[in-house]
Image (cartoon, rainbow, N blue to C red; front, side, top):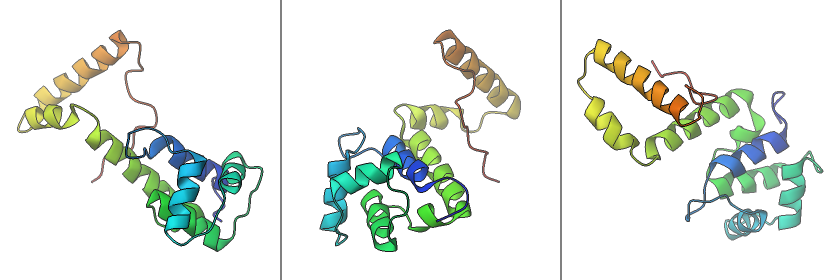
Length: 144
């Protein structure tokens, strides 16, 4: 596995950020069932042990099954650059699919740089008014 984040941290990240069809977090049972359905035998107990860090070195087949169950590349678990890139892609996907984001972005199209800066300042103000940090935590860097 990669030298950066532990396997359990990477797996927990997927549980926290990749919702199931109902829009809520997967359970260990659901992920084990998905992996099994895709041809990767694994138990829910073992998934929970990997998630908590109780077990730390899954076989490549188990890691591949978990990756398949979450529909991510196996390198998410094994390569630090893929881990970072995968997190950025997940965050962008979450941002893009959040309710109202598309409507907001559509209305912001073609605004001047000055107007966009004003809009960003106003959004920060609204976040603070709602008790949120001005900027979301771990905001990914914009793509060039």
